[in-house]
Image 1 (cartoon, rainbow, N blue to C red):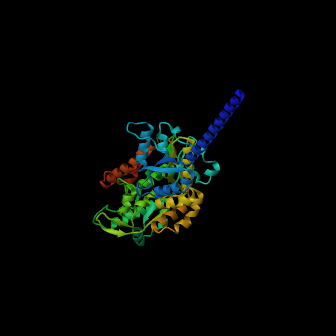
Image 2: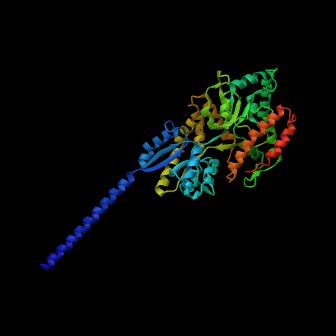
Image 3: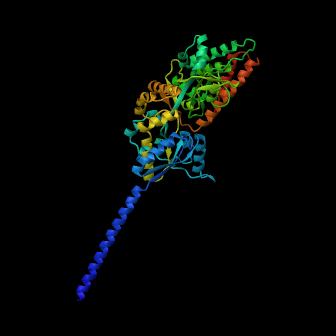
Length: 463
């Protein structure tokens, strides 16, 4: 009897143990199921559109409802702003400044933001999640621009470049009276020569008012004109690691071309962006970011408040005679902040989906940007046929020609790059304006002498 009781107690313990193990397995399975179904939330700051009217927000909604739902990932947009504000907000958060919020999981950034971080290692290296075979689908220069210290920290999703926008309506009136054509604008030498002819042509229309010719060209990015131009002719614009400007015959050649047209009155040197001067008819063409197409209407409003319907077209950026067809690539990319492997993988799933040609082509064509993969570029001719706006069609035709015939230039990642850029931009506008005043006031009527002096100052600029 005593032994039977003991055996029964033993069996009870076994049964209880089996029940406990079974219940634990059931609970673990339920917990695993809940974890799999619970979405990983990825917070995002970006610049594409407005908070309530953003093509990227629309794409994110589509992702959340399809691939995101299937894989348990939800992308949540917290901020839609501009690159300057996001740059400042990221640095404040990274430096733990009072009042600064936390960094999101992903944010839009230029390499300069990454270089300014107190600790770049807070960012994911996308090489850990994308194989070399995966990345071979992308335009190589777009990937290279996002690589810092051997790590891929800025992932491309949409790129802009520089193009030549032309008010064809005004140009055609000018061309009808002068022996010029759009093909003359394919080189910087031809563009500056036509600019001077336009100034003289408009000046001659009011013979009783001297020196009132109109500007023909506005260049948004003088710094790019110099560095890309010098590089296209086989030289280096930068001294050392971006510590200054390297003097060379090539640099002097392209400086003199620009200064001659600008001091002579053919180039617009006002404050602000090129878009404004083109929209008001103050210039006929501009070298500017391709994304500025978003700001052009199908008309111009002149200073006297009259309005004229016009046709804007886009052409690949001019090149120097004898030089390589080289063009600056622009446009930020996504950085991902290190967190957990699950979150980091989820962010990469989203980036892979966003840059798939099926999704990337509709996104970029709604923004005025270029796609980022070779396959997406191959689809552009077909996509162009679906674009209603003539100026957008012209822009994407210029993109296709650029991608086919040009090499994309990536700005060097020097610590002093931004400082040098700021000083060159300021000099290029203020100095040329001052020398223009000297010419008109007859303080110095020898334009070649003026250019000599200004070049000596220019080449001595340092950060």
